[in-house]
Length: 363
Image (cartoon, rainbow, N blue to C red; front, side):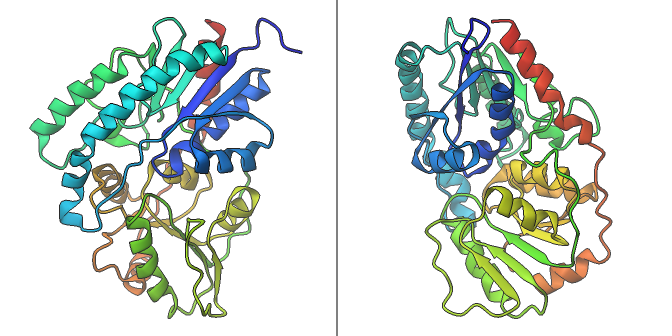
């Protein structure tokens, strides 16, 4: 039964690949476990994922940012900068949208995952992000300038929930632990829908797990499919797109899925000996939660993924190599000598519950 202590909480993940939506899953599940009512604001493809994960749940439509990456690495950063005016328009539009949604949906609190327009003057609103320090790829002066601008957006919210462990060890390095924090920053720990899962019966199988925006997802699919075809090891190939074209001939050593989610994805990952994937932050949180070795291929032009891949490679946690001229045989050989030191971060996957409870309790 609904009581005054049960709150209606708007949860709005960014539509930048599946990661932002996936990492909201434990937050949504925790709100439900506490008797609150999450109202998820998302676009059409995010809705499919949320409904598959939770079944019946309140969902309202909210257009996305529709970020794309250039096919060519040397123009990727310029391509993202060219989209900045559109991003700023979307931030303004979603802020206007929120004023009506709060009234229509009787919203008591707002959790935005990297959606900068979803702050409110009278309804408690927080923003989740792991990237406080923006890596522009254009030098430290540009990074500092953009960080100051970024902090102004973050400080419009009552709190900035930083998705990483507080202190060391941590996962995000300089991204989540810069020298200067926003005034409202709270490290909420790590988030993974797989955090409470036990270890699987690990095999030597390779799992190729693709994700992220087009056209780069499709470009990497072509590269990895051509190379996986001739590898004489069992491979599960997950293209990561509902619109992926199923190959005409699939050799016996490859199991192919256009998409895989939920329990089916968990089963494949738990039993994997090695994962080949992007270095998206949500994927990294899942890998650490499941104690999985991985070869990381950062998305060309996405400086955040390039930093994370290089940082974790230096730490000996994951093996990272560029997409350009990638050779799967050579990478598999190199991993034989790589340490794969898994960080001790399991306690970090529980911190968010106290952070969420304290915030809701203060309403």
